[in-house]
Each structure stands twice: as C-alpha cells, then as structure tokens.
Figure (tube, one colour):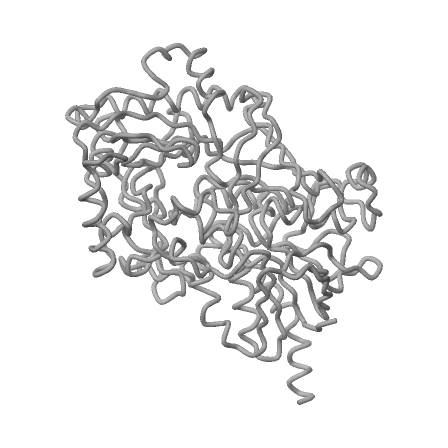
Length: 542
C-alpha cells in the first residue's frame, strides 16, 4: 500500500487546483489519480482541435444518457474529459463565472462562505486576465484568460444583429452586468488552450511530494468504519492497487463520476446500493440526486457570404493558409474556440437575471460536430440557464469499470419547454436582423415549416442536446438530501470530501469550468486551514 497524506480522485478542473495547492507545502504527501492518459495530444493544445476530441474515447468518457421521455426517447451523448485537465482539456475554453446572485443563492441555502462576495477574490486570484486588473478581474494568477485572437468576421455580425434585435452590447460578461452580447474571453495563452492542468498542475508536477498517476481508474473508497482511509484503483495492466490517505480523500470526478464512486463504495441511497448487491456502509439518500444540466437548442442558417468555416472545396485554400498561420504565429482559425461570440438574455422584463445563454458558431454544427454538414453555415446555440427539471445518476452495475446510469429527465418540467420555445424564437429574430441580410441564405434548422409552438417543441424534442454543464449530484447543504456540508465534507463520513461541480446546489448561469476551479480552491483552503495546527506541530517536532 502506498501511503500519502491526501489522495485526490480526478485530475480535472477542480482536482488540478487542489493538487497544486496541497502539494505547495512540502510536508504534504499528495497523490492525484486520473483514469485517462496524459494531456499530450496536439488536439488538446490547439484550440480548434476541440472538434477532433468530441468523439475521442481516449480523452473522453463518451457517456450516453438513458432514453429521454421528453426528447423522443433519444439517448443523449454526454462528453466528459478523461485526461489531465479533465473537461477543461476538451471544452470550448469559454471563461464565464455565472451571475453573482447564483452564488448568493448557495449561501442563502445554508452554505456560509459561498456568496459572490466570498468567491470573487478567488476568481480574481486565479486569473491572469490579459486585459489587465480591474474591479472584476485579476492579473498574475496561473489561469490565463485572453480575448479570442482572430475572431471570424461573422462573430461580429452576430453581435450587431443581436443589438438590432434589442439586446445590449456587453464587453465583459464577468463584469458588473452579465446581460448582453459580445465576444467571449477564453482560457488560452498565446493561441493555445490553457486548461486547469496547464495552469495549476504543470509546474506542481516537479515537486517530489506530488505523485500523479494516469491510467488509474478509481474503483472504491477504502473505509475503516465510517472513516475514509484510501482509494482502490485499477491501473493500466489491470492490477489493483491500494493508496492510503493518512488525512483525507477528496473526490474530484465531476457530477457523473463522483456520485458513482460513492455508491460503488457503499455510500448512497440504500435502495440503489442493495439493488446491485453493494453493502451499505453509510446511507446517504442524496448521492446522485439533484442532477441539473443546461439543455441546448440550435438554429442554423446557410452562409451565402462563405465567410464561415465550411466543409467545401472552396474552403481548402483557407484551411491550408490557416494551418501555416497557426504554425508560425499561433493565430488565425486554428486558434479559434469556434464559439467566439455569445451572450445572455432575459426572456421577460420581470426576470431578475438572464434566463438564457447564446453561443454563436460561424459554422454548421450537428450532433456535437460528429455529423459533417457540407457547405457554409452559422449555428446559434441557446440554452436555458436555470432549468426546473431534475434528474439523477445511478448505477447500471456494481462493476466499477461499467458506465453509470445517467437520467437527466430533460424537459420534465413544463416551464423548461416554454423557455426553450421562447429561446428559439429569439434566436430566429437575431438571424432575421438586418446585419445578417447579406449572409443569411435561409434557415436549415428548425426550418421554415416549424412556426407554431407545437412545431418548435417537436423540433426541440428531435434535436436538443446537452451543452456540457451537469452539476448537483453531491449537493452541498444542511438538508436531508445534501451530500456534503459547506466545508465539502461528506455527511456522516470522516476524512472524505467532494470538490467538483457535483457540489453545486443549483446550476450557475453560465459555463461551469471556471466555477469548478474555484470549488477546488475553496476545498484546498478549507483543508489547509483545518490541518494547520497539525502542520505546526510537525514543524515544531522537526
């Protein structure tokens, strides 16, 4: 058995932050476990390479949901990162924190220390924002945040069209006000992806007190009574290995893998565990429950200006030129995150904060990019930010190598259906604005036949997909269905915490990567503060 002070499961957005912070003290022996391989692929570090990563089972868990009753019984594809950096190594690099009131909601639900005012200094401390320091942004931090280097001209057309449709321009969605449209900032540096692994883990890996294990699949938390004492992993050759944690085990596997590992370890709803013959170590009914995700819908038009990224012979010269421009200057199309422009909008004048989010792509995009569409086109994604539908993560099997059961229950609540219908209508208004007059060659999806609410809803059922923001399955709080407390400690278990997007009580209004990193930061600070007296005693003993 290998002995450490801390064992962290999952080298994703939160896990890399936690490993860096804990190992900064040379007295702490830290082990970081990742089921996937190292982040060595050129596709990871080249921003446009995200297209090639979406279906890669090497760097992506490639999960599928259960059939969705409200989506024509379709199984939806759920990509999740499976490499150093986790989903921050395969995402679209959009840097968004969410609305300030989202975090105040968490604090008001019985989670002291998690308000926006509490977390803003952490967001700023992470940042090296290339725009410079401000009331809302920091510089000098490990996470590089940059403007898109060479946005496609159609991204600017989208902004002008949205303004013509009545939306305000917003140069900074992470500033004082979130509502409006503009260009996103991205987690990139010098035209390359700047994942959590690049930002927090790369320099930390040289520390002799940090062990990083890739190709190590965690199969259960090792328990002594009601205390977590380590992790069992299966390494690449199929052998089991036990890793001892003298102080704490921290699960950073995300909203899918963290609850799965808890249940495989006998911690979770009794009925679910007994159904699969798993001995109940600690009954915790909230494990896997409260699943929330942003369901996304698209409107697509043909681009008759041919300025988009296209699948056509006429695009080949541009593609070749773009390759050379990237090789010799890290600029141009390959430095694009594709989702360059976007924004946030309210569906009602009574809304206190934006209800929906846009991601504009100067390209056609179907089925997460897994289906090629010939020609030139534009895609406008729109997702509802605060869905009322709730799902759950369960087990399909007691086999730890099997995929979990994912049941999001999309559109179960009728309000969610109404919000997406209204969102599609707003997206159409944007494409119908004068700014798109010389570009818009006709709508391809949903298509001119879908005009009534019923027809739009039928198209939503046929085509809607995740925009990759599952949260909530190890909810933080003091109530009976909470899994962790405000210190991220698993209720009823000693020496075990969860630190990832699964602890969010409710979805934030935006992309979840930056908040997940701050959750890792919060966990580290809580753990270091808790163990400070022990560290002082060790220092005095030395």
